[in-house]
Amino acid sequence: MTCRRSGTSGRSTPDCLADIHLWRPYCQMKTTIAPFEVVAAEGCRLILADGRTLIDGIASWWTACHGHRHPHIVAAIKEQADRLPHVMLGGIVHPQAARLTRRLAERLPGDLNHVFLSDSGSVAVEVAMKIAIQYWLNLGQPQRTRFLSFQDAYHGDTAGAMSLCDPHDSQHAHFRGLLIEQFSLPIPRTSAEFAAFRQWFDARGDSVAAVIIEPLVQAAGGFRFHSPNQLQQIADAARRAGCLFIADEIATGFGRTGTMFACEQADVVPDIMCLGKGLSGGAISLAATVATTRIFAAFWSDDSSEALMHGTTYMGNPLACAAANASLDLFDSEPRLEQVARIESRLRDALGGLVGKAHVVDVRVRGAGAAVQVDRLLSKDRWMPFFVERGVWLRPTRDVFYLAPPLVITDDELGQLTAAIHAAVDAL
Ligand SMILES: Cc1ncc(COP(=O)(O)O)c(C=O)c1O
Image (tube, rainbow, N blue to C red; front, top):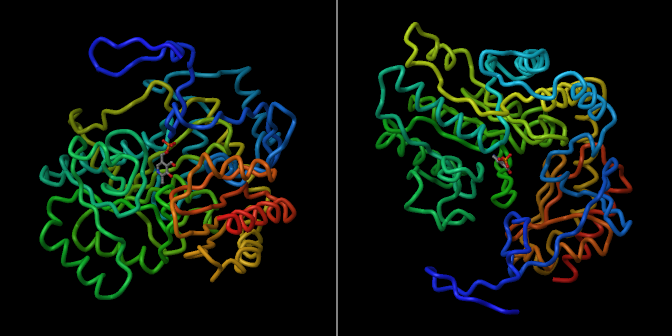
């Protein structure tokens, strides 16, 4: 490899870099293994360029709840593409957005009635932050500008969302000091921890705009669980301190934890909820930030400066809204939550045997998701090929092998996924 010196950085710049055009996510481009080329997908399977098929054990980052390329979703996108692929939402509405927001309001708990559409989960979190801060500004409490989030939290990769991730133990730790500083606490578990948690608000609660949590399952931060009771107590403490409560259901929404939304298991109606991933059934990017009427009312004013000034170019894209409406049709017409219950019981049976095995720290199952936590960090570059050789697509995070398959996965396919995890534990 020939190298020339770069002018200012002092690092050498190999000439061959000019030919690398796709800058891939979450990897050291120099040392990582070559990516696996996927050319098609069908149901729960990804089809590689060399003809092999892989069972998608993580539903392509938790999106493909009905499996890949579901004919009802594909047909809805095609029909919409023939009619209106895109139109701006400023000053305009289109039928798919109007219908989707109405249907979401009908399905969401409580009076989460006001839906702000965006194009990715991270942006939905940014919008939630902006709504929370401006809610307090509009109400004359400008000192409430900070957020309380939790250890092991992951809320996205844009600057505001990064500030809510675990500040020490996350992939964003490099940026500490540059991001807005927020509060971060462990999720309380015992009654003594809850007492301390409530006291924490006595000292700092006035500056907190909102508490934000991934309800029941902290996903990308290591698949950590807490109980509905913990969630309820956290929401209560936030409310008692006068703060808003935001549920980031981007990973947990749309059936993943056993109910349509995880908050329902704790009987909690958040002030603001973030949705994404499964919202559009795994075909196209769409996200939403949903507020209760109390929050929405704080922006309803004769004063234009009290309006929410946000809007991204592709927000509420008609193709994405058509996909999301089709996905909701499938939740209405097919027994997804029963399928989740079946997956949960199969996962418990299949992974229970790993408890107590060498290197296994914990085995957790909730809804259509499971984690096997081991006693070491897991290199994606080592384990992705290991799983591909066994005909499955799994990508560990931190110290966990985890599963979040399409909700339509068959028992046989699930068996292949859990067998591969058993093989991985044996190979540690
Ligand atoms: C809980 C949670 N919030 C936010 C995000 C960010 O969503 P996106 O990747 O669509 O920006 C994710 C993505 O994994 C997530 O799991």
